Length: 258
Image (cartoon, rainbow, N blue to C red; front, side):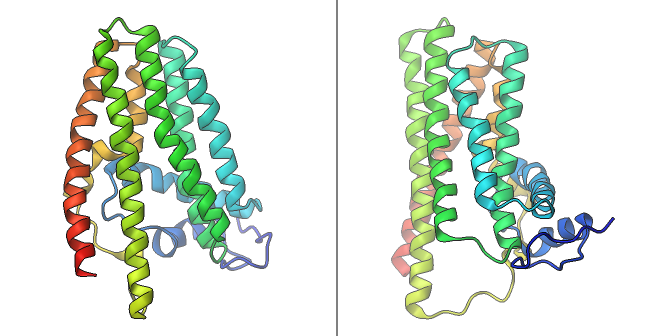
């Protein structure tokens, strides 16, 4: 079935079908999968394309998807700090955060589908990501303190993970901005190959799984079993610490050449 586009300002044909839009998103309006974790690459972004196509045909804006994402994840994380982990509640919380992650992917795709988002919309999206990144580890620290029978010293783990995760997020965003600035200063032409067409090794996506937000969401299903969640979460912290240290070396060397 073909559905007419609700807006004349989009970059899509007014008579593209849902399936056509999903297919085009996979080619021309998606980010590169280089550096993306396996969950993001093979689960979240395909679902995000479907959500973006649906939102486009229903006349939603990218900022509305960002707002819906925030309405899903932030109240969920607050409730996680209040409600004792149980199989039903932990599963619901994990699914809500995963749904929010789909919308987080879809809002950028929708912006590119409509011909490009605004600077304000991009800022809003990044602010929501930054708050989410910091908040989840604070919530986990509260859960450990209130509901887990652990020595107080274990609280260092979620606090350290919050530092590592936020530092990684800030470092990679700043490195990307400095690269773009350097290209502008050099008046370099944009790449002829669209980002989604860049080669993305499968092994790299598998290696980056511990850094994937979707994997952290999946781990929340195990919250009712304290020893299992603590073991998995601590392993993610160790892996992400290595990632951020390796990233600092790589980004510094790259930026020195600029």
